[in-house]
Length: 473
Image (cartoon, rainbow, N blue to C red; front, side):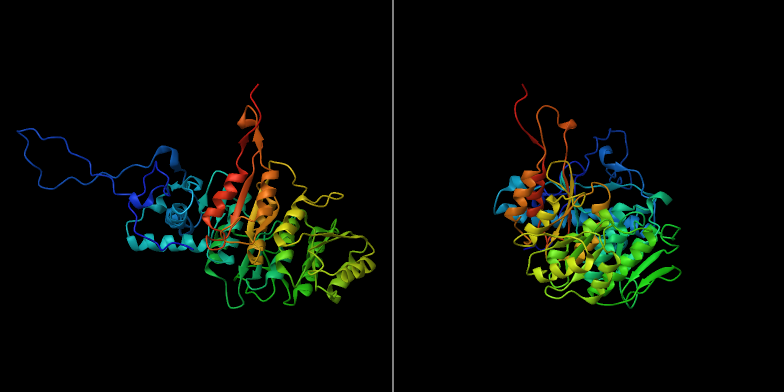
């Protein structure tokens, strides 16, 4: 349960803001030196000197739209709220388990705001954007209030937009209610297209998406077929942007159309096909990360009946191996036999007893070059809630860049599932004599503290931490 916001004192530049937050007080005013007898008192008191930020926390200015830059300045507001949540929870358990928030001081001419009204507006924009807002030594959270905010933040984390090379040629727009279309569209993040996903609406472009587009500035190119936007389903394309459109439809119809678009732009057939359940989104969610990483398209099926649109897509890709995600309750054995007959290729099931275990099984899986094969230390991971397939799709670009890694699921806001804790311990990095030569794990956490608590983030940080092993002899 999140704690209600409270009034806090000034944050010190050399003190973690989530340590003893209730005891924070304004620093004492500077004491003036005694005046000499012959000096006359000044008519006006001295202005209180403005403390300078610690040099270690200064950063160069961030170029880009002023609205976006100024929004990032007050991310400390988000840190404080999360710190309060952590502080209240840790009082009832072990305070030593709480991570320290990492604050950032951004220096820019655009951040010199003199109006408290402007500061409040900037803080609101930062919260809406969901930009990476709370970090421990081994985790970074993208904690916006909704999937559109988190998709924008993930896209900007991968494509900061500070130069032409830091911008994508195109982006994908999907309706925020269309979880299946969003998962399938993750394949467009793979080479050669590299189009991150943003969420749109039929009636217009959400503010957070518009802000992200202002920074990303997609303009299309030969690789994207000249298109700046791939519009999936019923979404409005921003004015002045060329778009390739995928007509609205059910999960199987949209996924088959996206697979055709992928083939046309890539100019070749995929190496494999991922078959996901349209009735069990939690088992389908991990497909987005791998599609973004590999370029293998996602097709959908009902639990007990194979849709005709998927049949047609499988026939077009005849001979290509198929990997089905989820147990028999998500995709029945009858359907898999039908797929084998249609596709003319072997079908392999990747599953677990529940969505958490199934995602771990996919992270470990390796067969003929298909699969993450993450069974050792030194990898990136992405963690989302099992009941948030839109967040899984939003986070897909994080699995196709940076520390490239599989999507994992948690089924609780407060508790790290035992299966997931065991997996993290299996791939926990260690060193004997020199930690600077070791491998490291990093975990992106996508979702606010109501979806994945700061306490659970602290536990993830602990099991991902590099540990000393063996002796130094």
